[in-house]
Length: 518
Ligand SMILES: Nc1ncnc2c1ncn2[C@@H]1O[C@H](COP(=O)(O)OP(=O)(O)OP(=O)(O)O)[C@@H](O)[C@H]1O
Ligand SMILES: [Mg+2]
Image (cartoon, rainbow, N blue to C red):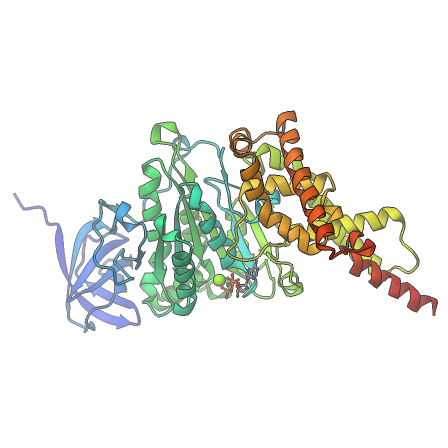
């Protein structure tokens, strides 16, 4: 009886960039690992009767034609485990941070099928992103896939890093997957994580632009495999992919080298399949499988806000919503520069804190109406009615509230206070700087005054008379204190008490009017 042959030996026939054609691997399977010896490894991307096309994923010594190749009939796996938390790894799960070897718990396949329908449950928990405008109007649920789109330099990475920083108290495991980024950009994220102790619960998968194309291609799958390890153990995982555009570029490069026919924008035809298969791996496991979840925030860079380009429109169609960042808003200083007209979350509102949903529901429309009104009021000559003035002022306060600095996530309790303060028009009495002070101080104030109430708010999450009266008490106390302090400082006079907010818009309208009259 012939012996079962697990290892095959083949020969290198030709080399083209990162693609090596190998003969003699007669029973190879797609996606398996092949070893060229001396630290060089590759994975099989395609084959015909006689030859296999191998993508180099790790470069040791250079390869020559005629070299021997060994392949074992096993799918490609990477080591995973809890010891990876706090580390920066390559897409082969090797240390990238120089902190020594990592002891893995097991090996996981990097191309497993996505969980089936029966293994999943509907989303029912919210991901606290810490970005006010997201948590209030474009909420994301655990297990959701929410795309971040935007031009270059519009704050895409910041949304992902803020989300990671905000998980300090939630117990989520965070993975930041950097594909095709410059090392300096990666270093900035690493520094940020170090400064904020985020490495206690985070992993970075790094495939910078200088790494082999094979590694950049694998990075997103490996980040997923690492996340799945924790998800199988009932934990909640968040993965930010920065970014899918670079991944698509890498795959296009590989496909062209493989000689596959280019399609639209020279991308290969299967790029949609490739991405959708990966995106499907986000899920919320049911109770029998431990209730774990995996949430994705993939980033895509668009050119000049063109949502209809091939890769962005593909990804829009396969995710559960998108966050569109607008370069013009970013330029105006409205950061995060969310375009609320084009951003949408298709499942998130179902899992939002009910109290936030009640409060923020009408706000989105109000904000969009305000922007329209502001635009129109610039063109309009003649005086504005009191109603319009009131609306403009409210809108300016809202705009101010939706602004948020980077690396400064806001927790849900604070968001509830802010939303109530806006609803009850308590902020109308304050000046711009005071609104910022209010936002940064209210949590500490509430904690000093009534820590039990904050716990209750987090536990209940629903609107009730009890909660409303508790919030009211704290807010009124705080604002009274602030106004009293202002009076004591003597820094304000009658005119200052009339808020400055909205003044610029009104002045602009007035000057326009004067010009027309003249
Ligand atoms: N909310 C914010 N407040 C203040 N500054 C911000 C904010 N968001 C982003 N920035 C700043 O804007 C710049 C670009 O941000 P970021 O790197 O997140 O954008 P990006 O879209 O990921 O850029 P790239 O396309 O280069 O990857 C950074 O210098 C960042 O510090
Ligand atoms: Mg970025």
